[in-house]
Length: 158
Ligand SMILES: C[S@@+](CC[C@H](N)C(=O)[O-])C[C@H]1O[C@@H](n2cnc3c(N)ncnc32)[C@H](O)[C@@H]1O
Image (cartoon, rainbow, N blue to C red; front, side):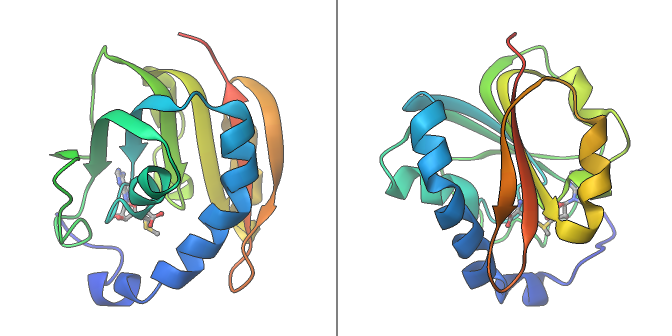
């Protein structure tokens, strides 16, 4: 599918993304179960899931959805990839993640998925899009230094 990003430019964002994940870590450790089944929409290179693994989480299953085959390269062995803009599944996940991609998705796209927790982070100037998110807000805040994001962690139940 056609890329909205350059995967070469995306490669240079790793440090910026890691800063945001680091800022989130205390919240993740406090709220999330240590063993997770994760669905990531806009998974890119799955840096977030690698970060979770590096920080003691056990990922039972990782399903990664993206529209751009270049953005997911190099692929991670622990991710089951689906390259589509219309992913559907009845599977239940502990965590649905949408990191810096929620503002690129059709409205209500995440509502079709079953997940106990939903973590969404968007660049600050897209923070208004977070109002669409359904679920009980557990935490929200600002993360990142080189680039500031607004994140929301909601609990939905299955
Ligand atoms: C800024 S990157 C973020 C990647 C990753 N979440 C991270 O934290 O590094 C946004 C990703 O969303 C993907 N994307 C854009 N539109 C999408 C859609 N409709 N469905 C799934 N992924 C999409 C892009 O291809 C890209 O990989």
